[in-house]
Length: 245
Ligand SMILES: NC(=O)c1ccc[n+]([C@@H]2O[C@H](COP(=O)([O-])OP(=O)(O)OC[C@H]3O[C@@H](n4cnc5c(N)ncnc54)[C@H](O)[C@@H]3O)[C@@H](O)[C@H]2O)c1
View 1 (spheres, protein in one colour):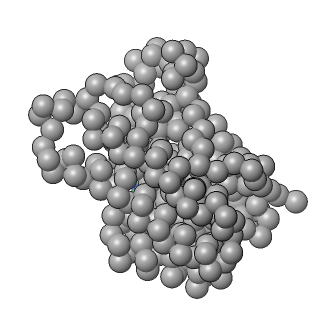
View 2 (view 1 turned 30 degrees about the vertical axis):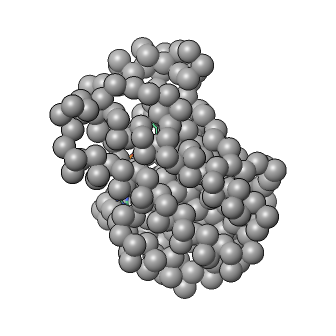
């Protein structure tokens, strides 16, 4: 029996990279999947792939920065599967830009997706999980929620916010049978990293390679499943040694 048998898992950013790899692993562990993304074309491809392998899966196009769309998303998820047990709150964007030249609009957009969007999804998840009497939320932060880097002030500030949002929500719902943890990836080989940057980022990493989305998925499975049943408010850094430097 899989680790997520009879569980319903909702994954934002499920059309690509870490979210799609996690959807595949969760499906292999017996979960039913709600895939969420702005990118409908890629989302539908992952949905079809999972269905072809015998998994119950539905793709729901949603912008996580829209309060109404996120509320509607959870209504649709509950009407499709009756409940939501696991939320992998993972959609995000990132861009490198010198801070003295960063438009306020770009700052707002980054923080809007990477922090506000994570809050909106978590809030709706909590509402459903409180009714259910249980649940697990895994937020994707970043190793840059722990350390700084030049040219990514908005992203790093938002990811630091996700680390402390995780602690705060975990404490608020610890006695309600709802666990909240975050995943903090290092440099992972997904479409968010420009092809031209990959060699330099590998060199900067002690293990001298980028991480794989599948390696993140295994850490997410640990945080989402009963394997981490006494863990809440934590942030799991999976970064090839980067933050140990
Ligand atoms: N790849 C890395 O090196 C790395 C490192 C640390 C953290 N992360 C984080 O991991 C998460 C997943 O990123 P990834 O590496 O898989 O990149 P990715 O670009 O492959 O996936 C991100 C997905 O989020 C979706 N998305 C973006 N904005 C959205 C919105 N407003 N509403 C709904 N969906 C939206 C995109 O369409 C995309 O499919 C992100 O939060 C990212 O910040 C990635």
